[in-house]
Length: 222
Image (cartoon, rainbow, N blue to C red; front, side, top):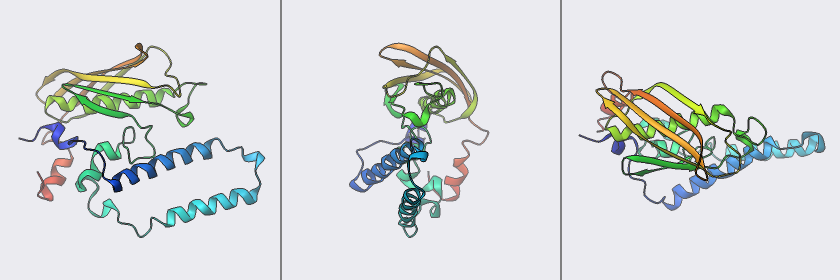
């Protein structure tokens, strides 16, 4: 039987040259989001804005004729379908992600992230919604150590202090309990060893298995 970690979070080898370029594209887009966010719109001319908009439109057109994994089926596209690549919190190919970098350490899951201004809530601090979302991703990965992969049932996050921008935030998580289709996972975030937030989540494997199971079966994949 394929272990949940092997199925949803396969081995994470160094990226190929082409995949590394895809990650670099995501990094450029992530930076571009920050550039647009911090643009002093009153200090530039309409012509300058129009020129930048045109250049971005040309960049988008460059993708128009490139292969798209959606034509294969998003959840059946091999490594490109891995949550390591597409997660909105930790996906290295997802420019929306900070990204939160996650690694397995025995039965634990460890990670780290550095958040820029795009994630700001209170001055100098990460928006609480992103703090909570990071735990959903972290615990969602950690629960796979139980051998199953469930969907988030409940998530309780206690924010002990603010999570600062531009500082490395460390994460760790693990499984507290596994009973039938239910997995209880825990997690915490720290800055230089000081506790920032902690979380407990309950994950439930749907009857019949994870929703992607039917997609894999239809495509005759394990």
